[in-house]
Image (cartoon, rainbow, N blue to C red; front, side):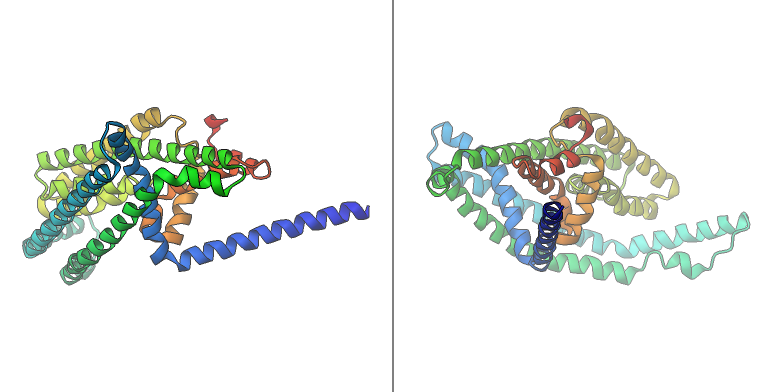
Length: 346
């Protein structure tokens, strides 16, 4: 009887120690968000860029030259993207007064219609939906933040450069430093392959989503369709809610510019594109690649969003996949990986 009590006490102490350690680690990650976010982005970008880097090297391109080609390409694309977003936001800021006039007209029509059906709403409530001064401050803040974004991007690319330099020699270093290096290398390879597959498929699906949204909005005549397509592409990486967040500014502009009927049509386009791609095409292509239950995906979105902000939401699925694969490697934690898995993952 005493042995059973001691075993229970030992298990309880072990569980409490593990729980306390997790709490301390999560609190530390949340406090170190400003440092951790660039590091995690650099790691995932390194995983993505390693494929073309090693492919060029296999084709006979020297490693330094292959790395230079990859880094220069990424920097060029980043500068083009930042320049496009900056110029588009400047145009949007210039056009705000005309959008304000259109919005006032649409609100007046809506008030008359609501009064016609017996609903009286004070004018200041509807007019307060679109506060021009707040929007100007928001857009100005975004434009000001582009400089800081460029600085962070250069820091991240510098970290990626050094990580890619270390990547070819990492297996040899692990074999020299670890006794059971083959198991570690196998586990790391599994994590990297899973992340590569997920990011490749997600990028392809997000690109298709952005293109279709941009085409639909351009056909309808909504201003800046490329900007809204880019936003749909980027936020599609956020599971469950990203596509809905991406639709809000575009639908608001459609209402201001073209009226409620066009807004309904634009919203229908978003629903069709995201519904077909997100619920039909993506599950078929992704298959068992993610291996996470829907509940775990949503909870990971909330958790990593709280810990790391927007970047945590973007990386929530890859980070959770890393944890699941790590849990699978140990008998003591394999049951957690089973609970995290989808029904089809066995």
